[in-house]
Length: 216
Image (cartoon, rainbow, N blue to C red; front, side):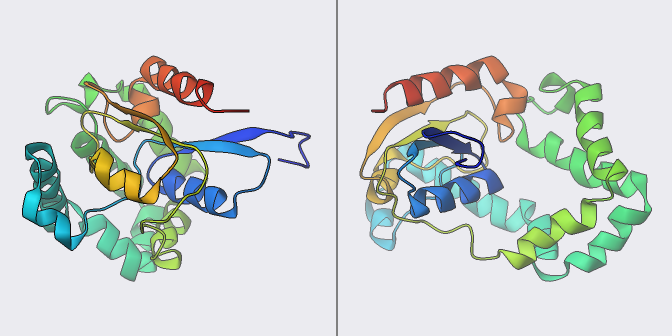
């Protein structure tokens, strides 16, 4: 950012972007006024399970469902990325299926991916991976950075937006342990894991509300 000429900036991320944004926040350069996360990397502690709220109990159920039924891609990419990589590099159908399934599973779509994103929008993303032959290299990130998805203590202003159909919807009290300077928290009624793609106007409104409240 310094090389680009910016003396103040904020960072935003979800999923792997949340891990990267968290790393920026941990470095805490003086130019960074704060961060916004739409999939915060915070988790319940063992003591939390004795008094879960109904919403927290649903989150734990979603976590269990993800681990048992929805995390096969991550286990394969995190342990044998090159194995799946050959298929992703060799077959456009394999590449399309590998990504399209996540649009089906992780968007706010009532069972039909096209309710959340147009077919052309999904094909744009799939084509980007195929035409750049980056399916295998992107899969390797799961193996190379296996410890990235851990709770970290952040000591700068943080904002969080929890979209309706996010994979993991942590509670505010879990977040406050890791983010003592939590300045924005909002739980929304629409959007899924690909919030910026699915609900761009809502996503931008969240960023403006978050960063607008942060001291400059």
